[in-house]
Image (cartoon, rainbow, N blue to C red; front, side, top):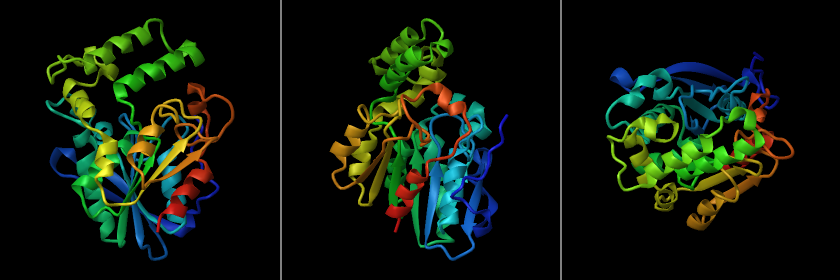
Amino acid sequence: MTEWTTPPYADPTRFEEHDVTLGSGDRTVPGTLSLPRITSRVGVVLLSGSGPFDRDESSGPNKPLKDLAWGLASAGVAVLRFDKITHTRPDVMNEPGFTPYDEYVPHAIAAAQVLREQVDEVFVVGHSMGGKAAPRIAAEDPSIAGLVIMAADTQPMHEAAVRVMSYLATTNPEAIPPGTVELFQRQAAAVAGPDLSADTPATDLPFGMPGAYWLDLRDYDPVVTAAKLDVPILVVQGGRDYQVTVADDLPGWREGLSDATIKVIDADNHLFFSGTGPSTLNDYAIAQHVDPAALAAILDWLP
């Protein structure tokens, strides 16, 4: 497999990295604190997307969160990123009542506390589902200075799953077995239906995630939560993203957050990799780095 390489906008001589541990008991997770060698006034907690990701959001040959962390730290921003509890303890998903709140919020707040020992202001930068969780984190921790929401969905996730599978069945039919779209349609109907409960078998629901998890997702509105916050918000969206799209998801942020700064990078896909033409599943297997334009959008917005 191709090894990850340092992106052109990162200079490892400008920062140092330290191991940290977040959480307590059997829900501790490891993380990495990237500290610039100059004094930092601003720090960022990085959050990865849906799935059992490590701190780098590793996927094939790519590590988009490591790209961002090293790019931000090279520019003088302190960064803390961490393995999700679903990465270090995949079995936690089967614990009764486990929800997206448990997956993101406690460790993000702990990360912000660690960063506050180093900087004056802490921002949350969340990608995909991490961006969707970001307003919830700021609602729980009023000391969060602002949010960067990167490619985060506003369309209900069970509906988006059907849309994405339908898209992939057309663009990557070799990767989508026959009947997959119909299966996701049935599972999405179960999520949306009145009978969904914590006892609904995970096998009847999208991605095999349990009923309590989907109940929490169904009841949480990131736009409404974000609109109640008194903090600056930057929404960054890739124009070629087929998972979270300009047509299906960005209008929710535009209409619900009148004061937010919104940046669309036309060439970028869901991982903020630059390209041309329709984005496909195959793009993610190619070794790439986060578009410098996405990094610049964050750096230009941060104080």
